Length: 543
Image (tube, rainbow, N blue to C red; front, side, top):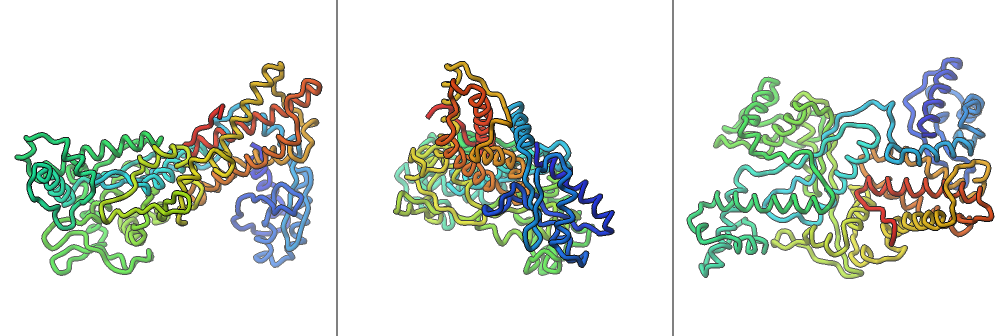
């Protein structure tokens, strides 16, 4: 991959140059794409980063670096622009070599065998099995699953986990709520308890129960409801294209005394104290941003959910994972500092813990807002939206925005089969390229890269964009979000349209040029397919 090779070559040259100049080089940022008005392929702010500690003029430093970088095989030209940017133009032959690497092994494109491999466990969705999965769970599922796919493609070891909160008082409360619905169906006046679960889904669940349930305890009702609802969660995730390596139940922690062991570790590390008959974790004095200490064991001896969460995270580290990604809904924002404090209290580096809090989804049908109210027991189910607009549209729309931004989801736009619909726009380019190859096969033409023939600006723009795919995955890794990849696919699709309009691909009168352009089309097809697959979106061959 050209940019991986280029980065390594640049760093080698930079190291050699800095030693000759007697300069200390700070940690340097990744490669960046230049602004549109600069005639270059890669823009490096490295001279600006070096200038201040070196007490040197950044433009002069950039000019000196340009001379060193000009010797790199992939670099055709190195120029300097104020206030000290070094801009590189790559050789067309190198871009075409990269194209051949794509089409030779599309499923490996974007991987980096020389990276330092990380062991990462991503936990996401983890919705309480007290009701169906709602639309926000789909956003969390997209973030977690797509990010895991991207990190694996780069070369990291990644596990995916769903944490099931099946312990504590919620089982009893869910059971009381279901029993009330069960008795209501049999003509009894039995109100749902205060603070109970009001959703209509419990009426449907109650209708599946036979008369023998009349002798059940609330706990038995609760366990029945959780089993059925959890089975529905698994079915919804499967339909959404999301798989988990493990569905981890909180009850497992209690069964193997993991909660007690976590508490003992915190006591041994002198991180807890007793007050008012309760056991507290001292978090407010740590550099984690928590505003107060937290109760771990109540005065009546019952452990809090927070202690169970600490035990669960300890279990993750104990299983050999060195980094943890937790993806939570918008209502968990305040949980971040206390969990960071807990990680530190366990003796783990806080930097190994990566919480991602995704914001709310506002659902629209055209200009009209679709009301959602989980508090009232009414909400839009993920399965309903998937059934209406399809999995591809859901996942692509969810991946388009950063996790910390609110998302407006237009059901009508998601169903539209026009270029206004971003997922349709990208899939259509893939299908169009497939149709080009079907026509080429009829004419007896096959792909063959030839750098000497791919000289048009539209062709070079595509070659360069294809080269940025691995770098885009690295940006996703850095930002812990798939949105840079979704934006990249849209941009690649956008570059294909002017190429298709101005560069005739299938032309038997110019067979060699046709073969070269077919090779370029193959690269576009493969990268779009691979990129969509990393987002959990299909790449149809016909539309």
